[in-house]
Amino acid sequence: MVTVKTAEEIGLMRKANQIVRDSLSLIEEKIKPGMTTKQLDKMVYDYITGCGAKPSFLGYEGYPASACISIDEEVVHGIPSAKRYIEEGQIVSVDIGSIFKGYNGDAARTFAVGKISDEKQKLIDVTRQSFFEGVKILREGVRLGDLGHAIQSYVEENGFSVVRALVGHGIGTDMHEDPEVPNYGRPGHGLRLKANMTIAIEPMVNAGTYDVLMLDDGWTVVTADGKPSAHYENTVAITEDGVEILSL
Image (cartoon, rainbow, N blue to C red; front, top):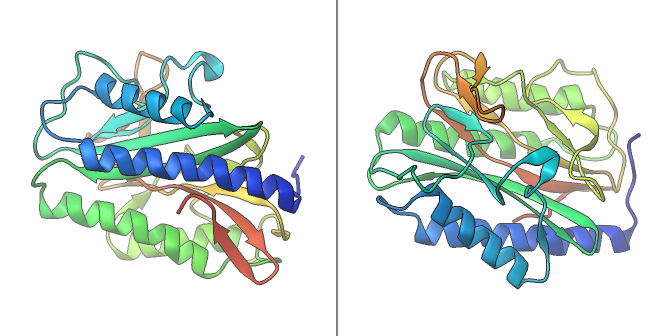
């Protein structure tokens, strides 16, 4: 069931998302070659709990960490490890959620580690901008197919592909609520957005094919062709005259 939020509920989600935003800013400041993904995960846990919130990913359907940390060809849901070292030239996608007074925040960024290739930088930039291309058209009454089409068109015009097997989602008291929010679509199709709906929009963009595979750990999703992938996500509230990005 799709839920419409009250102003008070959106206020709590705004706080949850500010905690997520600031956690990601901390990672951006601290990430460097030689760190382990587990060290980054501990930073996220310490920051979120220090703000009086809970990491929403920790224990979610058995997930063992506070952040999903995915490197290069890993699309999403990479499990942090004390044995996984971050290297110069890699791109690292970090997805974080927090729960504040029962309400969820959710956002993701892809970071460059040191000097990266021009293609990887373009991939990060296009993925980020594809989110904003979608936001440009958002307002009450817009259909989800229009949102997905705006994201997909921008990505494909730049020579990349949008993952089909994974989508964004509604968000509120549950991290994953209805509706599903695809990053691809047909104009004029899909659910019409209403004022005070809250959704997480999260383009996952691959340098090569949009096909993905699941690793044996049951969580980590990788590109089928081994080419790099980037991820950019924010939680947004639909307003009567546009959109508020809660995690910026």
